[in-house]
Amino acid sequence: MLTAVIAISAIALTVWLMSREVNIGIILLIDSLVVVVATRMPPGVSLSAAAKGALSERCLGTIAILVLIMILERSMRDEGMLSSLAQSLKQLVGNGKAVAYLMPAVIGMLPSPGGARFSCPMVEEVAGNRSSQETKAFVNYWFRHVWQDCFFLYPSAIAASKILGLNVFQVSLPVMAFGVFHAWVGWMMTRREVDALPHVETGSRRDAWRGFAKAAFPVVEIIFLYMVFNQLHVPFDLEIAAVITLATLFALRRFTLKKIGLVVKNAFQPKYILIILGVMIFMEIFTQSGLVGQMLDGMTSLGLPKEVFFVLLPMVAGVSSGFSLSTISLTFPILAPMGLTANLLYVACAYVSGFIGNMITPMHLCGVMTSEYFGVKMNRILARVMKGELAVLALVAMVLLLLRI
Image 1 (cartoon, helix red, strand yellow):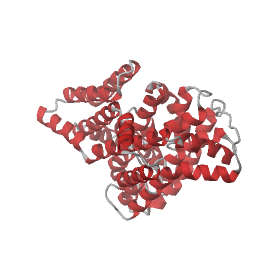
Image 2 (image 1 turned 90 degrees about the horizontal axis):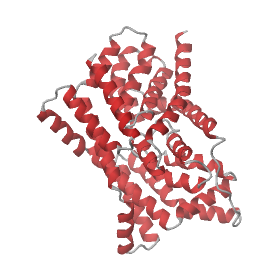
Image 3 (image 1 turned 60 degrees about the vertical axis):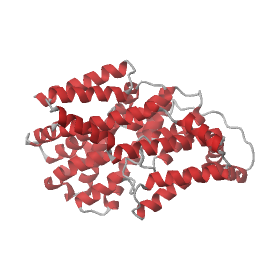
Image 4 (image 1 turned 90 degrees about the vertical axis):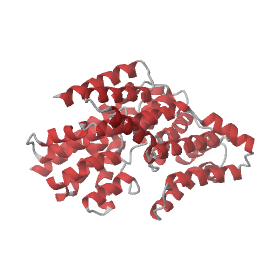
């Protein structure tokens, strides 16, 4: 009972503060204090948890990669590369509207927390003022995740395969089918709202390919380097890939030290650092308070069919954490003894249920970064996301029902 009261109170407080446009980092720090007081965590334990969250490798790594990506995005914008990339893609694809969906999907191959911030200006470049800010924000957030976080190089997919003793492709491929459905739902929801800026032909297709190659090389380079370093098990693979990509861009574009300093100054935004700190501190305090464990234990004691747990446990963990890796790590060890691996579709449904939870929580950094960039209230984006995820959840329920028959 206490767990439910705390959870409902924290959610209500979060929604109210979000409606007042308070920085989500500050909101989550306030929520952390609510959890500390409500669960009577000792001061030493709560301070230790806060420090652990703020100084963890995940927190520092997230800040590092986000700053690097913002510098990369700013450099590409200042050099006119984002505009050139959008124009070249529109000429090659022949449909500017499709490019608005394609941009965040390509960037989605990078498993970077808050990585949607990288594709925001790309969607803005293509759509301009022909679509509402809310629509652009939704498209960026939704299509950034069409991979359902199950791309075989994503840490969450790798963790799921290790926990369940499966090949990573056995986990990834069935979830990809849900990813296709996810993309279709997003397209159906926005197909009449997205209207790309008109494209003016500026040359041949060969010129378009040349322009695309010149403008897209940083994106291609960082994805390629990440894949190589990941397969070689190099620590900080994405961070190193971003540093090398930036160094390449600076060298080829002959950036002076003064210009690099100016780019860094213009790209750095402290409000994003506050957001990351708030998320990480809240996650750590919420976990150490024991509330997550109590919630999961309470659900498993209800005596419901296993299929219900395959949906509810990952979804609750997803809402609580906002990170796919945390969601998988918290729930798959619990679900495995229940027969999760009896059918790969069970695995896919549990994975997707956790992903739905990740998508509808205000702790998901991609949603926060997107709302900040487009100047749209986070609760407005989440309201639209919830409508779309209901369709995905219905598909999950239908699959589980068919498996039960």
